[in-house]
View 1: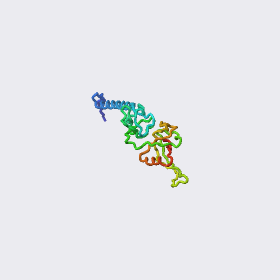
View 2: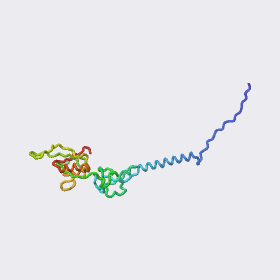
View 3: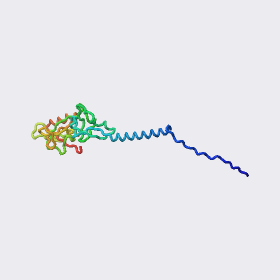
Length: 221
């Protein structure tokens, strides 16, 4: 059987056309790269940006007036948390006081500052019956206990038992003072304790009663 060989034309390779600058795919790629560079630069700049904020020079207790003398300025990196702290590039609020204890070296939170009318504690002087407990200072946390005097022999009125009872717990010491009125620590004779308004009748009644009111430091506070 005869066979016929046909000469078929050789296939022509398709040539890829180089994309021009108006090619949408090229424009989208350039836009994505530019956006990534800008976003990365913004993130690095934001992370490295410092903001001046106020830091407590010493322990600040509730009721203390907020003044520049009790504060120092520190430049810190806070990123998006800057609104939570008192900024040093803005004026201090007029007539502001501390609403809670701020430790020495701690950034001053905005929430810890307010008006005196917002305070729910009052400073009550408590005479120490002996040497001040070791480590007692402004900002310390203490419990108040009352020990009644035992009934005297031959008393005409029956007296109660001398069992100590707790008056209030977790109170903050505002300051310590000596008999001459100066602030003191080891030689302190009076501790000014911040007592919640609701506990004032109990504490003041015990201080006026026949017995002893003692401060008991809270461990670890």
